Image (cartoon, rainbow over all chains, first blue to last red; front, side, top):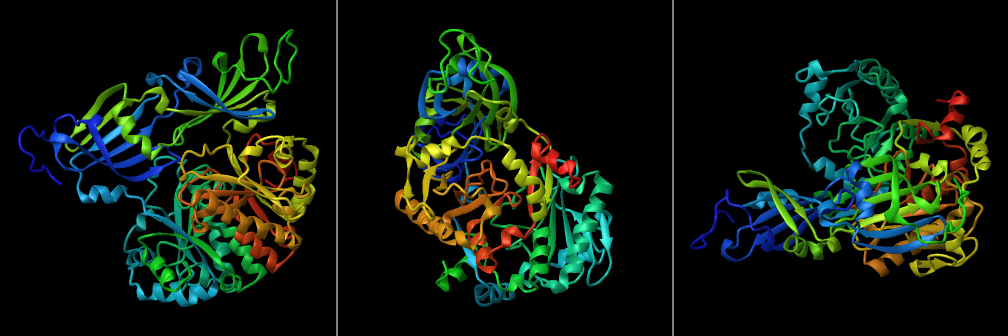
Length: 309
Length: 309
């Protein structure tokens, strides 16, 4: 890629991009929910073989244009009718169907990778899978969690601590998550990091940890109500499995905020975890757990090598 | 609302809805992230003052139409250019900018409330709460599920059935969900509706239902792999609690698709439900279950009256 070797009139970065003559090289990623597509494209002709990334995104509805949209449709097709429900395909006139288009040109390999979607695979991990595949993998990794220890030892972010229980077995520190800028409450996001360093994840939990977990649930809610005015009934409190680092931590997010990582194949409500451990101390050393792995994650390769995917 | 008092030619539920002459009464809710709008509308003229809910949703991009979209735009406006980045407003021709439109007509106050944006509260429902609050509430409601029976009896949508197991106890029908337009696989969404009519929700399930649940898991995956080429490891298969209607059904969505209703406070993986019932036949008649209720939902009022919120 780069400015390219084409002779003659190849325009530089400042010139308008010939959007109409773009050839689709690859669909990097699309988001059906957000009605967006990330495209690896290249202009044809004079512009040579330089790469571009195009981001197409349909725009939200504007309230004041909705009646016009319904009135001025160019075509309307009934798809389905059942009782009081019916669905249609409605084709609006061009002026009412803007697409926001972002062009990155010239794009490097790094830009392309940034937008490329990885395939995801669902794993249903039995306890045996955990012992034979996941645990050896975690132990072979030396992902640093020094940043967690820095917080626990007040070597970093000491001024950000919202609540602290210093008990070495049953204590924890509550801090705002990096993803939350604390400017507004609708995307509130905090993390409780446990003081003890011998609990990697959900898989290690037994009834021994109930006092710790109950402290996090109770004191975490109280601290957030006191500091931010958000009651416990408006909080989603959960663990991830797999977590992104293997030092036990609990997520607190605003219930109305559709935060990443809240879906059923990754999140486990702390209240459910507590009830399961009350029911059976070795619940998490028995039960199969489901999680998704992206195609480029090394743990997926381990499951594939073991013939479990 | 209802069929209304208008004299003369007012059409019934079966007649085509006069979408072009709809008046916007209120915007119930919009989702900027999902490019969707939920509208309280009413037809004008002969149709009187009955209410309708209209759900407008822009459709995802189709990969094979993207080049055409770029080539055939009717207008293109440069908004911003900075170094390698530039943004445009692109106006596509009507045939490339479908809007999925769902009409609920006539709509009752309940339908309007369902789509109106509200504050949410988390409920942790014990089995006693279920028996004393939730179950009497469900029984007092008469939300029609005629549309489900229409599908099971082949009175509607018969041509949309993807798979069917006719066993009256352990059988089910698999159909595309209304929300999926079937144009692309990445927002794949299907629903399995059980044949038997005596299972309201997760709360009714015991080990007796294991053959039914295993059929849905196994045959559902196979049918989707066969028809759409999507393997089971790329599917999220789950129940909702609370469900939006009390006839047992199971959701199948593409794993890569962040579908609404997949979050941990509502979704229960079918594989987990099966394992829980194997562990303990009365698991769902013992365990507390968490769900969120919007401020206007009558069930929340019942929990408030009982002092449980």
